[in-house]
Length: 111
Length: 113
Image 1: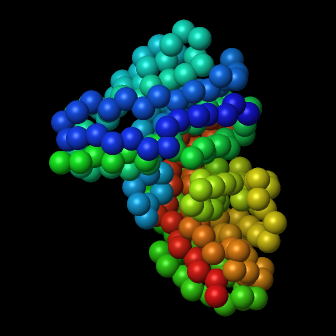
Image 2: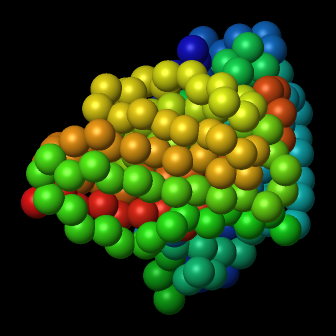
């Protein structure tokens, strides 16, 4: 199973764009890249998923370079309510639906 | 909107007690999962189920069992609670066997004294 590495913590200010990069050097051909967000005392919440190039939704963008060995979650113009832990996950259909969570990145947004 | 509910937000039990954690979902999802989350260890999968009466061990099944008698309900059972099972327990559901979005419940913070 592909292991992911991401920064333990990041600080930002309201209104800034935040980019969180995740390394997954041994990603398999059939693996997807997924990001979850978790607020304190809540369960994780799906943000975005991609396979290659760029994916954008109403919450975030996900940039995946051609070699797929890393990915970057981009949060545009963060607010205080974006303070949370962000998890990068890599996996595919052969995992039987199992998610492998790493340590995540604790994002702190300051006023 | 998918709704995943867990029977309790906070629970305090004594060592040796049998503990039941219940999870109910309202979206007819086939897959259901139980995780525990501990500081520094992240989320770890305990058990999961693809269908009624089916169960599979996750990464840390020791000391736990599960029951899925109905599609919408997945129970986690601590046969004899121990202090090292003090943790946040999270239930999740997913639509099918593929690598798809999982929907998490709010969690149950269990303290075993």
